[in-house]
Amino acid sequence: MRKKYDIKLSEEERKAIQGVANDAATTQQIRKRANILLLADSAVGKPMTQAEMCVRCGVSDVTIFNTLRDYCTQGMEYALKFKRTKVCNPPIVTGEKEARIVTLACGEPPDGRSRWTVRLLTEKVVELEIMDEVSRETIRTTLKKHGLSLI
Image (cartoon, rainbow, N blue to C red; front, top):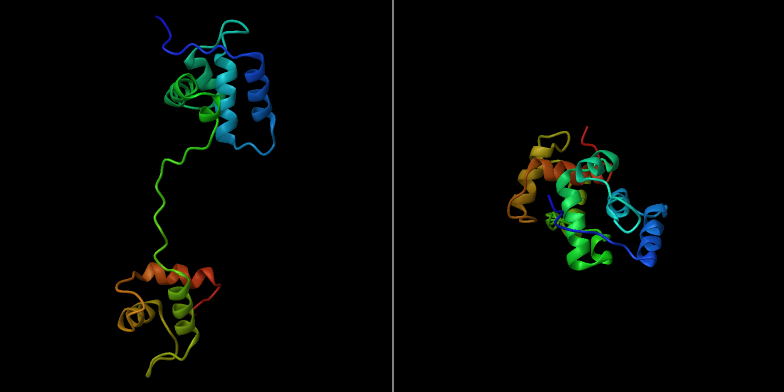
């Protein structure tokens, strides 16, 4: 069975990849990709099989395949860069809203109450139109971020 991607590193590429793999500032994910490329190099001898690389590097066969494909199609720099696959959602509570929530929590509780609760704060935030809608968990984590406890 013929391999789909044959890796033959030049001496300069090999030294550069070894430098990335041995650099203390390199993330574990990038270090594993660098090691995959070094183990797949057919210029220095018979390369390991993908199954052997999976065990040696502690990654899945898909990671091996994708790394080799990226190197062959996009080049070394692309194969060894961080790729974010998850799109981050913007924060729900921005700086101004956060400040108003914290100010409200530090203020006087409503009449007939001895203290604020997360449920009361959630209702008040919507009532004061600080936010259109908000969950109790969002209010709780916002307060926790500032080291505030309602107890």
